[in-house]
Image (cartoon, helix red, strand yellow):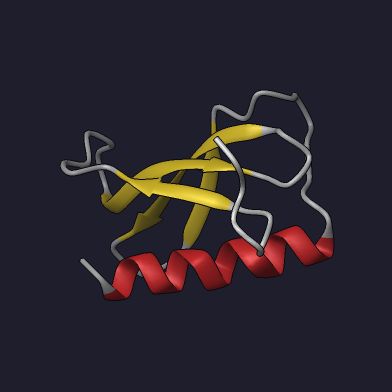
Length: 76
């Protein structure tokens, strides 16, 4: 699927199966690297099961991810 203008695409799971997660879903970064994200009960986001070991998104991707995540959480 085509990425939105931010370059980041996230989905939100209808039910979070991660213990301790308030919400979870998937993310595709602008360079095509994918992973699972979660937000814990204290509001801290984290990445899990990233398709590229040791991956760290660029500063622009990290910022766009946080913006997309905040927007998705508001719609929950």
